[in-house]
Length: 366
Image (cartoon, rainbow, N blue to C red; front, side, top):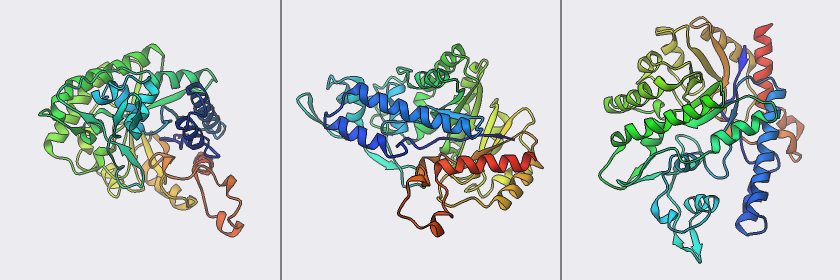
């Protein structure tokens, strides 16, 4: 069986990113020094995943502050009060995240909200009637190329347009449905650029699909992806969900032209039932989230293998996946020197979960 990871922590094995950003804020290191530290963290974890035989290694899951903030910048959703400061691109980004008080002006940070049922908080995108959603950044493409330069093929991870529109705060008369055309056009351009780079897989994260959806919500979701998927070209598109099941839209999702569908079988109480009641078409790959991405405990191999066997009875094309990004667990137990062996032996952090994925796949394959 092939193996996948939805996302990996970006803080660094010894919290290098935290210390580097704090130094940057104190003007103790330059922009280039901060970027170089971030680059080293990314390459280190890509190499770890390759070493553990992960077939679908994520890129663009790294962030200097927040993934939804990254997407706001990528889609040109930067409110005027931050643009008008006249700062460089990185400092404008941090002004949105932290606020800015200095010679250029005085602005507060964008609000934060809890990321679904986790303790992580995201920066809320702010959209007004003058906002022009369009592709205006290069981060996903640069990270894919960076990984390619060290001979690692990655799947690019981008939060989906539907989740973005649903989580945004609207400051004018326009609402999510008024931006369907613009956001679809931006994601089509993303696919066009990745086609030129010969990317094999792109992962669109749509965790909002596990929440209660109205009929209008499902219509918006379908309108976006019916248009976007017409332009996927040679890029295979994975729709990734997590933090629950997609009972409100499962039938709609499996009928769309996705090449892969990622379901959470840990928190998704109905995921197995949905699969048993209606099989995923054979031309699609099921990315089965069976390794818990949110807890710190070792996986029960026997129960996990039994779950995978049940899943495989209903679809033959299965990839072992984490249930969500490993962002929500610590980096590794390797540096936990103050915890006794009797306790630490029960723990599995992000790096250790790579071993679990690899070992479970080997047990099933053999």
